[in-house]
Amino acid sequence: MSELALPRSAKRPIAGNTATGFLKLLALIFMCCDHVGATLLPKVIELRIFGRIAFPLYCWCLVVGFHYSKSIPKYLFRLLLVGVISQPIYALAMHHEWLDLNIFFELMFALLGLWCMRTKVWGFSVIGPAIMLVLGECCCGKFSYGWKGILLVYCLYAVQDRRRGIAAVMIAFCLFWGSTSSALTKVFGFTFTSITANAPWKSILSPWLKLQPMAILSLPLMLVRLPESCQLPEWLADVLTSVKLYRIRFMRFLRCPEWLVHSLWPIPVDRCRHPRSFHLPKWLGYSFYPLHLAIILIIQLFMGTVKL
Image (cartoon, rainbow, N blue to C red; front, side, top):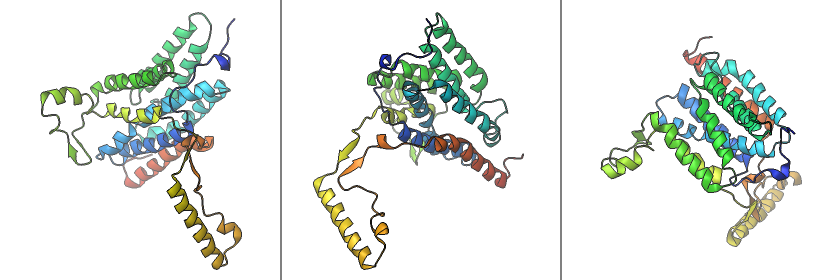
């Protein structure tokens, strides 16, 4: 019997952060920093460092989404659709060839590989992911992450139920990934020559003082798991309550409408919501990629660095 999906009860639990809405929002911000640094501000290396955080977050969100998704075909279709729409804008804005596919195609190949792993067809659970690795390298390997990015998704999927495993995969993969990347000598005005002068420190820190290993900064975001809500300290709750009461009295003194009086206090005085309760709208998560590339392209057109 061959099935394309295991029963929900047979799925392994997720050990890391499952607040994918919040993680995707951070990934969008860091991805925008990376693209701005690569095109508009190439001398600001800090933007590229922050940009390294985006792809591991996308990979982890893909693993979590694969775990909870009710329809993998619909998930694949959304990735394919955004990839196709974004491709011409991506090629122009990032100065790539037309056939150098964007990151959404790579995520689609990775998701197809995970889907193949879940099948019970003899041999296909191994052959299918291997084919996706080859396709990822052929289609996305020149300027994107290629087979290494797809392999990272596979590794995170393999250790999704163990926090130590997630940490070990990210540490090992960042060191392997960054072995050939450019070295970092100065960040935020701080030079690393002083701390790498001694031989023991140099042998320990040198593998990390490169651009790609900075992806390890995404690890705390992938591992942290907080309660759904956290109680505020009593003194802070009292202060917020007093501020709210005085504000209501002042606005009523000014004869403001009641709906306005009670609508300008978004912070609850008894608890703070955990980011797990934040849900990023799908249309925003998927449309932001082509939109921010279009904005970067328009800026480059005004600067004269790109010609249509």
